[in-house]
Every structure is written in C-alpha cells, then in structure tokens.
Amino acid sequence: MKYDKIELPYSYNALEPYIDEETVNIHYNKHLQGYVNKLNTVLEGHEKFTKGKTLEEILSDVNKIPKGIRQAVINQGGGVANHNLYFSILSPHPKKCPEGKLLKEIIKTFKSLELLEEQVSAAAINQFGSGYGWLVKDKHGKLKIMSTLNQDTPLSFGFIPLIAIDIWEHAYYLKYKNLRAEYVKNIWNIIDWGKVEEYYKK
Ligand SMILES: [Fe+2]
Image (cartoon, rainbow, N blue to C red):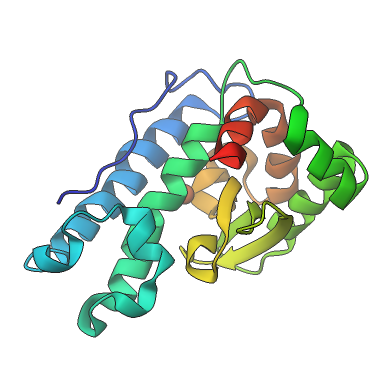
C-alpha cells in the first residue's frame, strides 16, 4: 500500500494574497512530497501491517505500529495526513460560514463563529515551536480546540480533525517572515466551511 498527497484542488497562486504562490508550490511539492516519500520508504517491508489500512486508521492506533518504525510513521505519516487536511480545507472560493448541525454545535460550544475562530487562532499562534492549531470533533460530535507539536495529529489522541492551521515556518515565512499571527489572521479568509462541514458529517 502506497500513501500519497491529495491532488491540490486549486492552482499555486489561487490563495493569493493570503498565501503566496511560491509558498504553496514549495509547501505542497517539496515539504509534503518529502513526507510522502519518507513515509513510503519507512513502510517498505511492512506490507503485512499496512494492508487494507488507510493512513488515518494507522495514525488513530499508534500502539499497533511496529515499534521499530513507530516514531517515524508518526512523524512522516502525520506530515502526510496533516498537510492533506490543511490543503483540502483551503479554497480561493470558500464558503464563509458553516450551517446546520455544525453551526448549532459551534454556537453551543463557543457562543459564536467569531469566538471559535479567535480560540483556534490563539491555539495556533501560542503553540511553541512547530506544529498545528486545530478544530477537532470527538466520537460524539463534540467540538474541541487543540494544538499539537511537530507532526502529531489529533487522530492519535482519539479526535477527528476538522480544521488544521499549519504553523511551521515553511507555511508562511516567505511572505509573513516572523509574523505568525498575521498569517493566522489572514488564513480565515480562505478556510472553506463547506469542506469543514463535510468532515464534520463523516
Ligand atoms: Fe507544512
């Protein structure tokens, strides 16, 4: 079983002015591709383990990953799964506001969409070092905000990721330099709530 990156659902310059063309190109073709290549190399010879399993299934049950490759799969596999989610929820023509059950749950948990966005942003901005800020749901559909270090994924902690904000410097440094907060503020302009709803319903 080979694991792969998603097909980018927009062109490299489509997220401008919020994320520049060069950043999307390098992030997707170099960084994400690097994780894909390393993950598949690490998993060579472990076909019995990977057979029939999606990457998400593997990362949801890390104790079952053979010990010798466990941390490498967490790092490289997380790099693939996290980036696939990140790129998939961005759009040049995003749905600006969720509706239905997701919106109801947001109001119930965070009072308003604005307050939710503020809290996800804070989780992303305040994460020390490299990682992600997340909106996730638990098995019962309850929403929660979290941050993770490096390429750790909420899947490994029993949550299903809905929104990922990549705050590794490679996600923003070319355009924003050290201004992580500015990048995080701007990314809400291109987060597609239609896609987030899709993940919430799954
Ligand atoms: Fe990244």
